[in-house]
Image (tube, rainbow, N blue to C red):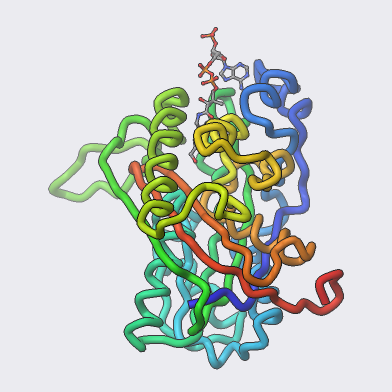
Length: 326
Ligand code: UT7
């Protein structure tokens, strides 16, 4: 499987750390020092569906695949206003697609989970062209009275078109149960048989625990993928890591003893956009012409669950209309 099209979309509204400090007991210096985040884009006028469509249309257009040639749509999403239908099925008609679809909740590792599944579908001949859309609105499940979580996240969408090819070399996915460290609970309806009223619980996170789990798990994933493919850290051209916290990325980089230039980041501008983050990074780097033919890329992400995913791939350049990479 290889990537032949990319897209991303961010909400118009840019929220700075100082704007947050206007109503939360926080500061620009705390947020930038502890996380690296300066701004994030938050949904205000647009809907998540609209963002997802913009990202998906860009991926379709750059791939040269017609919407009707898409065999499957996989939508990575943790939560949105609809529990049913799936976000994937909401996207189909506006995109002009008529194919099977499903939503996948792999938390912030959802894009890598989606890529792994797409790779299996393509290998077994179940599908040839697959559109993966990762669309997330974590701002809508944070508690905006609490400074611990709300400053970390941003909304956004990314999309990748994949098809048969020689790009992806290896995947490693893991899963484990650590519910208490990171969760968001939505209330369900009561029934005549179960009248226990559950309350919606905005995102709860034990930051330090998640930090430690994330660093440990990503290092293990990256080391395992390198070892499995008889590669050294030096053999990777770029490490595209989940954009949650600059300190998490630095800890992984220091373990690998690799230079900063190999770890491109955009969390400074967007915060943690959950499963959309790596796709937004890929789209930006690719459109800026920074992903060259034959580059070896290592993707790695972690998220609530606790789940993780890593992928090793060789990049093939994509030609975009109206960009420097044309
Ligand atoms: O996709 C997965 C999503 N989650 C993550 O990636 C989160 C992983 N964890 C982290 O990124 C970090 O743990 C945080 C950025 C969340 C927190 O950084 P930290 O260095 O682990 O800080 P801490 O939780 O140990 O808190 C240090 C202090 C505390 O005050 P005291 O107890 O020392 O007085 C907190 O109450 O910072 C305080 N604090 C804040 N201060 C200003 C916590 N949040 C804030 C805030 N502004 N926003």
